[in-house]
Length: 280
Image (cartoon, rainbow, N blue to C red; front, top):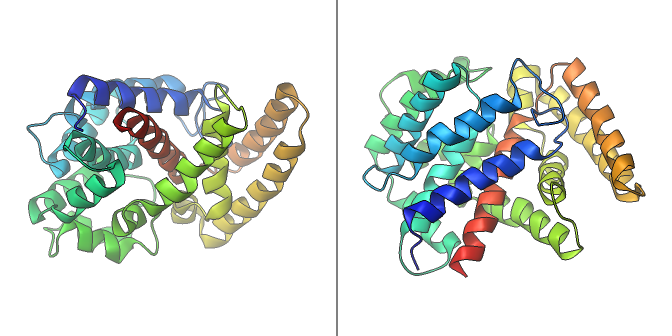
């Protein structure tokens, strides 16, 4: 079954909205701005990128580039490069007939070309993500390999690239699993998204934090998140949960730490969950 464009677009915008409504410590959300960005920046970014990301006339790389350009034009900052990189192939997969979303995603990833690589490299340079440095200088040049090979080369240092290299294994096996588990035990509202975010934050040192603050800071953040997760499980009610998460949020933002990759992976997990329900 292939989903029509309007339903895919609605699913993408819904995933972005659910993410920004969730209290994700260290990241931007409706409870607190941060890192020079507001929740409104992310809402606008979702709205302006939904069109190019769901344009069936564009290949995956060009969708990413046009979405990044739309974001830059609308909010003049990089709010969503990781989200766009993850959402584009998932959306392309949802457009294909037959098979599961995961199987169709593999088809999309395997079919990417050098043109896709060039467009994605241009998108990364346009977005100018924080911490882009010497290790990433190759994106400023014409690609020498296809996009999937380039992502495989970067997979050890970047969790977004790792998704391309592994068929989005972490999105399906960590994030989607957390969303489903939370929903199964009766969590609702923002909580499935929060538990997906915390699952990523505790499973891996966040690569955005590592890029900007170093590997040790990323590992410290992961360890602190693991301790908070234990407290979260023991918290008796929603006000106690919110108080716990807000305290962690303040600690991270005071240090300038933004686990942005964990947030991007959360959006992808919410999108996979929504698309999977519709395709079932």
